[in-house]
Length: 237
Ligand SMILES: [Zn+2]
Image 1 (cartoon, rainbow, N blue to C red):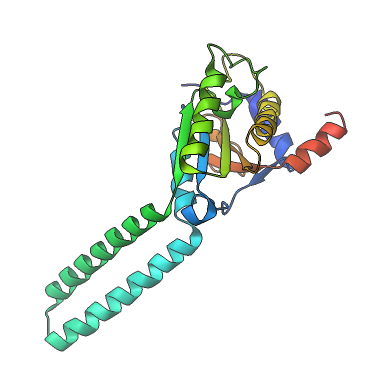
Image 2 (cartoon, rainbow, N blue to C red):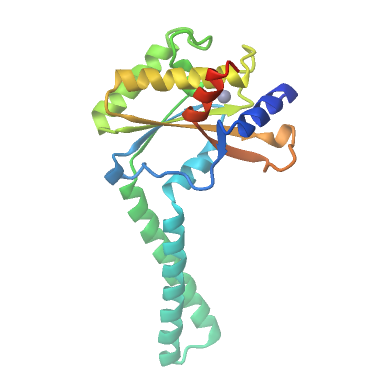
């Protein structure tokens, strides 16, 4: 298993301090059909990102609504059982059945409202820039065609780029975090030119579990700020 290096951790710390990496507490949700849906481009070895995708689908608002609905269901079932003079076991069974049914119903409703098109490839967005060391055997052309098709077929207007560390594709070619970020911004620039009218959002996921860092959870997702990155570049960092 590829591990986070000390040098990676040092770079990440510096990017957090420079606010290029901003901790994500609540992700912007564009994966809804009404928001035009979303294409997520990610590295294949970043399985942990699936958690983040689930997070995107189920927003904080949905969670709050789900808790409220569950409380209402339980209250109604208890009132109903009191009228019927049900014993405790029957009340519990009725609540359990009602809550399960409500959960299934809301999952079905949510999945109908989400349009999320996930494209995974080793290296993910880092394959997009022509100059990328990961762009071998037409990898870039393959991914670009997949994106074009997704835009044409589904009419998706939002693209989310996920990069991560430690990365099984970036590690072997000795790509540092700064180079990954440069490729990430190059990828964004290229997508904006190729597909006018789309929006691009960037995230960087760090798995600290192989090299725990004080003050960080074992897995963190950061929003990558273009503004802070450009400021750093201006200073020649
Ligand atoms: Zn990777």
